[in-house]
Length: 226
Length: 327
Image: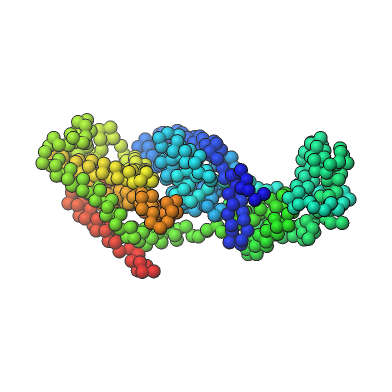
């Protein structure tokens, strides 16, 4: 457990002294989010150009201002007001400061203005190289702004334990093993019964449904006591 | 304590926090009344519960649930929400000019990179009518000569854009000029190469054009057109360059900080200059589209207005917010 797990979880400590983990997002979901945003932006601009086609010079001026806003400030607006652009939200991503707090105007502006450098020379080549080198998947804009792109996952409420008669654990079971037993019992409702038996046999050394029964009774002893 | 007792005792508080967070995560207009004043206390209780659950090796699902709740609470409690319009007023009134004055040395460097080549090229092109062809193609030169030909009714517009309305030109200036300002800043992360080249290039181009047209005798068209918006536009170009050079400074001379740390700090300082420069370019776009291009206004009026605008920009950048400089 003490070894660093091969994972993208980035832990930081809050002022309350507890460690929180953020799951940083890699290049593939971010590229997909960028594509979705691109489609949205293109659609809005195309719609606008149709709507104002009859306004001649005034319409062109309006279109160019819109083009400017879409090109530079679209991500800033959505990141500051909603936490992420619509494309990122579709993929369940969120932009936050390094300390996990929601991103503000200065940081969002920095990371989105530096997009032009990350994009260079084409299709985010610089940004991709930077993301692949960096442990937290930061492109240049994220490095300068001090931001992270993370998964905005919502933990589900823990599943209820199958209630059986508790049975005291044999001596010498480590805390990690105790925890594995608890996790097994809580998750057994979501697994196929054959798989449940297989895992329970590994945990208890018994066979078939007896093994499942035994594992559950240990878990009940751990969670509920006698 | 066993996990089940713990969950039974603490679950009501968790549910209360969850309901508060559900409300807080909605946009404010769809929010229902909720006892928000309880948020800090509930959040800190859940922090403690989360730490306990981890320490006592309760099940992963429970720890994950509490982790998610703590994370959401942290996000809401440490969110910075303030009156954005008040911060905007404070930014224009003092923060932007003060930030520029704190980085005055880089601003003078950026200005030198821009104005020195402009003056040198201006002088050379003024003395020799053919010298401009060393930096511009004959096609570009003839297009530019056409724009300021006194025989032309619409000033400062190429043949293709002659029939453009003022609003159209405004849109073009916003999209093009502010975009250039943003690129000047961003490309500074390439060790300052971007701002260096963009400032030199713009200085050379603007200086050559000014020298060449003066030598041609287009005095009554070129200078009245550019004078009006020059104060805001040229100064904003130099300020964007300053912001870009600040990124370069973080990478080339980080001082006692690590380069990553210096880059973060300088970028947050520089972005204020970028925002200020963008606002100045917006003002310049208004002037250029609706005032500079108007041939009906007599040149002396335009020169007087330009002098006032230069004075206003200089006074604003050097004096605004000085009362807070010592603070």
